[in-house]
Image 1 (cartoon, rainbow, N blue to C red):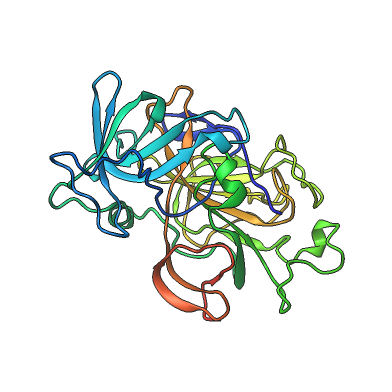
Image 2 (cartoon, helix red, strand yellow; image 1 turned 45 degrees about the vertical axis):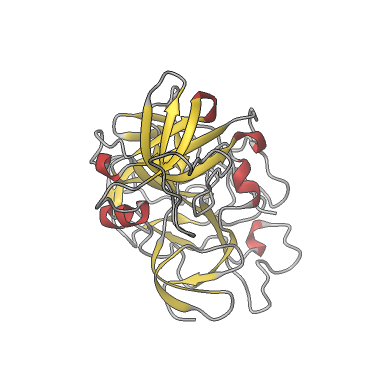
Length: 330
């Protein structure tokens, strides 16, 4: 089993500047038991649609937005608790950094009511707004055909909010195996030392490149991930983890701009991992958190070939575990 997991990062006014990150799971999770569609101004969302939600807190404050995620603290690896965090998106507050307040994260411990209400007229959905802001993945970061081990499920949900929306990518042979031989060394794995290219352009906000690669086997939750993180727009970031020790190019430094397709390293087996793979995640900065932190958030892949066996070209897609993805037809 692959594994990814990390503590909270440190942040400054320009974005992330320290720490080891991880994340995973696309799609929103509604807490149906708390959504009250019987309120006088409430409208139950259509099937498959996300609710525009009003959150009332214990101090009487109210927040409104699209409920795009619910993070379950009870299954976290570190400090599990009987608590949920709700992510509310309001497109009216989407802006360049540091003014972006489009995503607000609210603890269930502070919530007295969570009501489904009508979406304000003319307001885009989260996905529509993210497309407009260019927050997403414009290409698969590995050339050739990659296999999605995990698309935001299983152990990713245990990673303290960094793992609810993310993907783990490996490379398979024709028999559907990720490695040759007995798989006891990193060089047995087809993904190991594959080139990693930026899936979206942005400003580099964090680089870790000197952590050792670990041998395949049980994951060490304290291990350090080599990574590259970029700020895409406002408080939204894309991170690539588990890079090969020393493989990040010299020009990929904090403050530099990288473009879609730029080489940013090689697949390794550094950090919280059980075999060589690439971890891909979108993150959003929590403006209210103390200490500062980010949360993994839903993201789409653009113009990707995707399928369980034979791929079809999709203008927007969210890969899930068990699918293959590629920039080219397969």
